[in-house]
Image 1: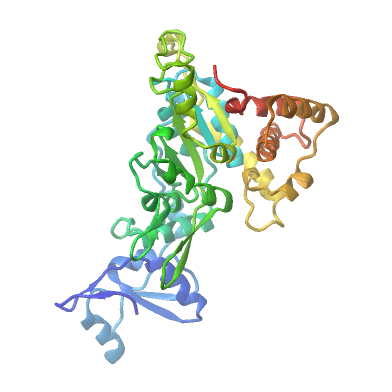
Image 2 (image 1 turned 180 degrees about the vertical axis):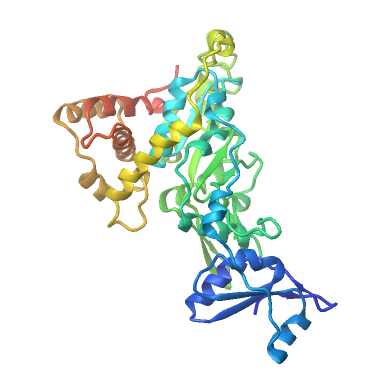
Length: 406
């Protein structure tokens, strides 16, 4: 039995009902009594009888007199069918075809993305539409996401399953504990709440340096470990990072319509606020220029999110087949160096182009692996078995900070 008992005898809802139901099933228990408000949430777990009680008197009546308690009956397929529609769409973005293509590549391979451009170029607008082209949520992913939101107390009253991918956009004043998680009784942070979805960090250099540096471990490992004197907790944190920043403090460096007042030294100092090791963990570096007037006023409609998502889904299916025997790897972005050798077959011409790019850009070993992963995703979008020169060429374009801005 799980619940909080009120002084008047009522059974109040608690956090974490779903993970507790999963734990009860794993422990071999036949049934579980939860607060009535948690019945829909705990009821998504198969293989265990979940009953709901609104008061201690109802629980006593169940045990003493065999009175019935409401039994959970959740149609999980119906929950997925009732998932709310997106209220934003890629078709609303005017111009920025290069940027939209980069977001498609990022979504197809689960890659982290950094957009650099002047104010008003559409970086935030693009990032907020990224979840609309991500692959459809599976049941396992929905359960994992729901467990985290349940522990954090973020499920809506009577809610059962989170069937949409999360989008988290914390302000740059957030603390490292707020981002990673913590507290006297450790709770999930933003990186865990974004598990399976998108973590959007706008104005990336404005975040405190110690806050940005704690991102490196979850970005690499896909989980967060919070240690306290009495215990240690591990929360999943497999998210897509979508970050945005201006190219300089004033925002106009490299813009043809405005003069930058920062100077070369000011630009370098601003970019240096984001450390090299963190940049190496971001696969795609993308320049997002200001939108031309003709694109803003044109009548041409952009491609809708549904069409882009279809291509992304096909690319992800190819990756699922590729990594079927590799537990913990669901997309190209998660590949290890061993997987790169096995899964990234490169033609001779593409190998020569890649060798030249690595030498000229002086890429680190990690950046080299990023280029290979991006090229593999581009090849998947093209349904190509091998990585060809065109795929490598496009992948190298997405490393703008390696070759310098402007």
